[in-house]
Length: 224
Ligand code: DC
Image (cartoon, rainbow, N blue to C red; front, top):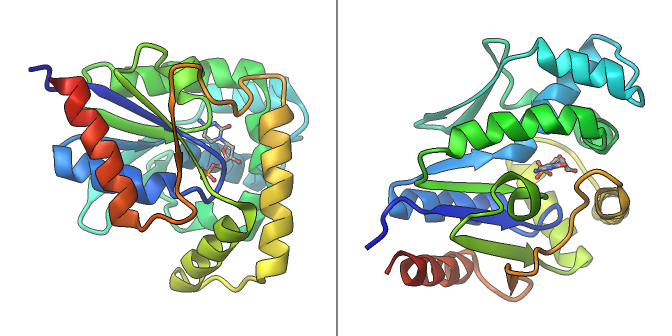
C-alpha cells in the first residue's frame, strides 16, 4: 500500500478544483497546495510595486526576491506574501483581471515550478493549478483534468464572490472566464492542456461531494 501519493488536479477557472482538492486533501490527511494562489500573490505584489506586467525580466526578478507561503489554518489555507497575510486581497477583481498577464512568463514559471516541486517533494499532497500534471509533477500517481461549461463556472464564481462579499455580474464573469481560458490555454509557456495520462472529470452536473468521491476512489486505486 503506497500511502503518500501525489495528486495533480488541473483545469480552467471555476471548474471546482480548489473546493474539491481541499476536501480530497482533508479526507486523506494530505497537504493541499493551491498554485493559483501563488501566481495571484505575485500579481498582487507586481501591481503594488507598479511593475510592468508584460516585462518577463521584471516579473521574474520580482519573484526571485519574494517569499510566498501557504499555511493551513482553521479558516482554511492562508496565503502569506513576504510574511503578510494576503489571503483576501489576492481574490480581488484587480488581481483576477491581471493574473494571466503575470503567469504567462516562462522564466518566472521556472522559479515558481521549483518552489511548488519542493512543497510536494515528500508526497501526501493534492496540488491544483493549470500545469501540475504536465510540468510541475509529471510523475504524480494520479492526474485529474477537471472542467465544466463556461456558464456553470461563471455561476459558481458568482456564488463564491457573494460569499466573500465581492460584488460581480454573471455576464461579466462569463466574459472574464472565457477570456482567461483563452489566455491560459493559448500561452506559449506551460499552457492549460490535459496531460495524456490525466483522467477527465466533467463537474458540470456533479455535486461537490460526487466530484470529491470520484477522485477519492481513483486515489485509493492508485494507493493499492
Ligand atoms: O486557479 P486560479 O483562478 O486561482 O488561478 C489564477 C491564475 O493563475 C490563472 O488564471 C492562471 C494562473 N495559474 C497558472 O498559470 N498556473 C498554475 N499552476 C495555476 C494558476
